[in-house]
Image 1 (spheres, each protein chain N blue to C red):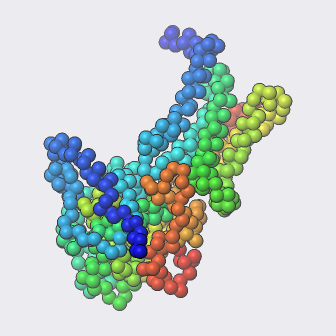
Image 2 (cartoon, each protein chain N blue to C red):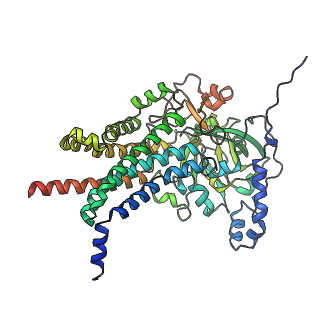
Image 3 (cartoon, rainbow over the protein chains, first blue to last red):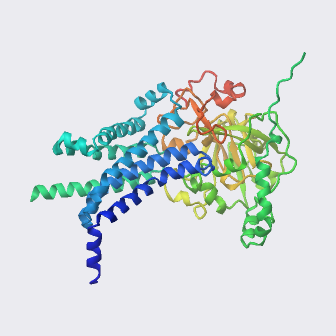
Length: 211
Length: 319
């Protein structure tokens, strides 16, 4: 029991070198889902319908990275590992990266650049409308993710803009929920995690106001 | 001068199945030794050596398409059989437990001579190979070499009465063997239906085999419906009961989402699923990763044979 404390402290504060290595390792790990697709496609490892595998994998990994980004603050609070905050931008940009791949797989592999069909889908099909909306909301967040942009906007405005992540996360989960044919188990899991993450924020906002 | 057009690739010249068969030589000896082999034999779709049962005396059919059939692997590892789970790989992974012997098909309802057929009796009917296109409501398609007989031949044996306007198909429900039925994804058992003239159409098949062998469990062993001009879910798997009725039956997908799935569910590029377009489809295994999808054809290309069944009907309303 006595040893637990110093170890916890050692994880709470990382030396610059350890942090740099941790970040590099996570950066590489985050490329794993893409590597699986890029290596798996020519080796025929993506199943009988590879286009479906690519579309689904990029979609679910987008959601996973959005949720990972939203987990940073609660994790920091519970563990005291404040360096986690310095990984958040990378995780957010990975969410955007996989969203771009997901969107590209739809435009290219699914619709083969058929502009009319894409516009019709976005207008007519609610699950695509909301998915597209979520993607569109990610663009300004990615664009303003640099230090320079944050400085130019000013902290308050920047923070307000980046609250969009809550909205787009909900849109992303609804997108998944609406597209499944019948069995909602998978989207329900993402919805539950998102509800917990948003619930944490609602609770801390409420506590702050009460205090 | 007579210039002959290059012939279509004949089904017999396509060898993925041969390749598939060779792989069994590796495992045959080992499989026979396994205690599990006994269970497989009892199940009836494989013999003592662990190889699928070859169906004898299968005739070729003029109703077959000349298109290139999908490989055995594609047909048996990418299935919708929700009783075993909703992932495409679930049926291949979990259908092994389906009990297919003993198996009877009860034929009843508005018929003069109701009868219970043992599966062995049905397998003795003269069988033919029908290579059909299969278009899934989800927007993908395959070409599948089924083995079976026309449903009509079974119908004629029971003599439907004048009141028999529709045919209802009830499929197997074995909760102890079907992990998917624990969730109320659909109403179990899965029920399908056809209008009597659709059931009597020569294209409508009761399939008992695939690639000349007994039907694999994930594809609906031991006997299933195949209606090639309708979306795949109309072709009910593992049928245990065929009932002739006066009123249009409520089918499983209609009960689950009636605005998305209709009783007829004919393949129709002009009537979209509310959530996706039906104008195009991806042919599994044949359209490359970066090639555009192909256009879906009305009645899945079987319009010449079946369009007359629907003369005067508004297929937008009766989708």
